[in-house]
Image 1 (cartoon, one colour):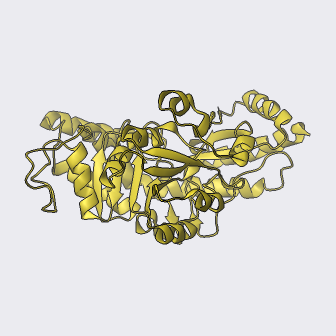
Image 2 (cartoon, rainbow, N blue to C red):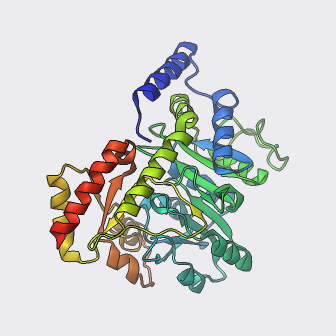
Image 3 (cartoon, rainbow, N blue to C red):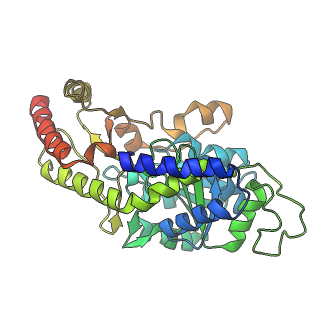
Length: 377
């Protein structure tokens, strides 16, 4: 969440203390242990492995479940490219899937059609804090014996049926990077319930925690980690830990205000918001505005500029299946058809959840969007 004066002062105190104590790099224990413990609690998992960012957390997750050349991982085509790059780095093949029009979450009806004997895992995005249908995903996971991984970078603290997502997913990966709900500047986490998965993550990404910090005996014979150094910076963890203390109250206020904002504007004629599944206890990193009449999209942007409302255009355009990173560099040529994601990609605008922290700002935003909708005709 956005930093406020008290948050900033508290973070400065914590950072100063670390600098004075010269604890700027932590191999194990101390602040690293505290951060992993707090993150495990946040996502409802038994174990945690801290990383330098969310992408590295995903890289460790795919290594931990032994993704190798030719293994397929299904991912929504509406998502961030860094979700998928680690799959390609390990020789795996991303298989893209369309999304639901009213939620932007992975289309579970289409998903099951593209599972085959090479499919090893499902990587599920929780776009802007909106949760995918966990119950249906669990059914599919168990039916086909797949790993279920959540990219929860937008969904810190979100729950399904009042339980944190770590109760359902094999691995939760999240970024605590730039402008995230909890941010250390550049920081990530993976949480899980399997000690063996936890150890394999250390094996690949935490130099000098192997073998002494492993919980299983399997790799105790090794003299050190075998992969890339992905451990996080102590200052990033200190900043994030400080934010975690006030996070529940801050996210509650923002979520309540956004819920009220959407409820008061549910009768708009030109702008619609995302729906959520009944059991989803979502959070908000961004509020998504969809204008189905494409010719009115530019007018919406101009009217928001006139009213000094900061916004972003669709962050996920191009879609993953057409992104040159995959089509050109990695040679991933998708054979699928993604009509919903294609239709919506140019019709989406994003508002930061930070806009909804103050009650007085909420009243203004409701008034402004009523007027914008009227002008859109």
